[in-house]
Length: 85
Image (tube, rainbow, N blue to C red; front, side, top):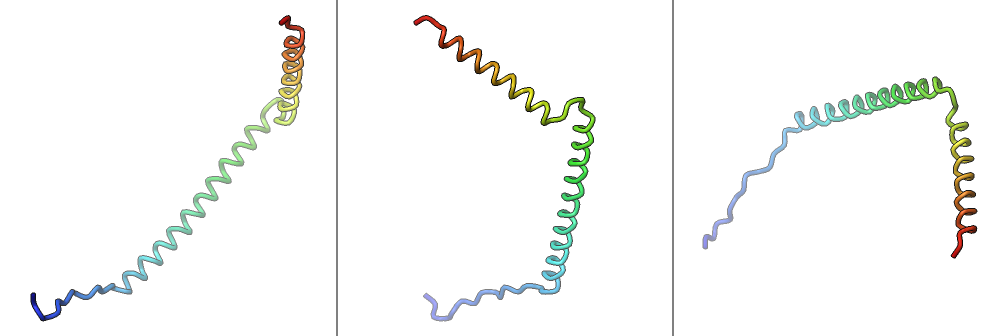
């Protein structure tokens, strides 16, 4: 065993390069966020235009499907009750 303490090299960071990297990272993040918002708005608007071209509105379609569901459930319930055991 050696009695002299071992010296490790110092961990040095170039602060100017680190600051430049952090600034670029923040600018890139903001640009990414703006791009994501613009893309989402474009897709949303295209979807709205597409739905506006439908002959039947989504609420009317949902109401019609619900009426179909109620009729099918009533028919199934009636058939089950009338079934002979």
